[in-house]
Image (cartoon, rainbow, N blue to C red; front, side, top):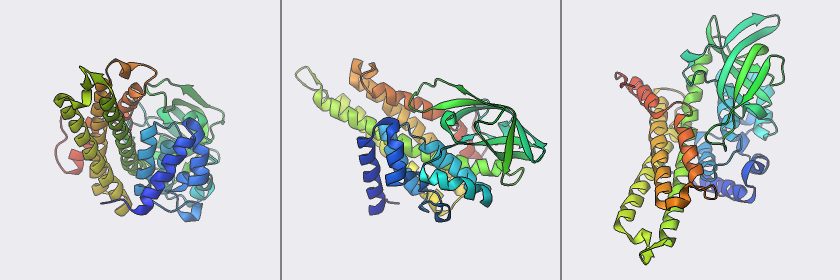
Length: 360
């Protein structure tokens, strides 16, 4: 498994754009000039027709900068949900705007802190010409600024996917204040909200299972990029900070800690790339589930450990608002729980391998 010259060119373009346009201002040039929003969208819907490896490259660069752009929620989760649904009419209606970056979509999925479709309690009831949804959704990425809401709700046939207008009667967002303020999340409250079915009724469990695998692969790439940036910052600081008349990076104990961090980053990179290449080559299935669950678990723990080491080796400066170390630590904490914590994904891995799930 290796990235091509084209992948490295994409990386260079994304990195250059993020340097020129920091923060949320990066979305328009990333979508309009680099074309990241449409990478995973088929050409028939106005996208580039690329796949999970290209998404991996973009996510790794976004992770390095802790970028707040709505790429993960819109260009990964929502796009994958629409494609997995097999609803060609909904794809034709929604994907061109998402591919161009002129509209943003949010997938409202989690309930009670769980991304397991079995945990969905939001109800969908048939109504004249459509459906009505009632329930609450948590951890909706970029939900407050979405132009389109895709909501998972339960019908008599099982979990299903619905499209909901964010300004429709009965739709309300509650702002949340997560530890990681660079990743916008909201709580979505639905009270008899009008919706239209996307895909087949009762097919939402399969759709969300596919989305989960792609979400884990993409998030693992982000975690790798952020952990690598933490390591770079720490190595640079260790060469500059002088203690007892010499740079602290010259001390054997510090060298060992940096070497351990390097091994964690590279091991995580291998796991994330494995998941990305599996998603690109084989599509949904047991092999992707195994590699995506492994990547989410490995990369979550590696990022958390490297981010904590970054704070420790920066000393007192690492916990000040003026330094970025604490921001990476908060992103590590947030991403470790997003789409499920590591121990849950190890249980998924054990199940996929036909083994008894480990104790929680």
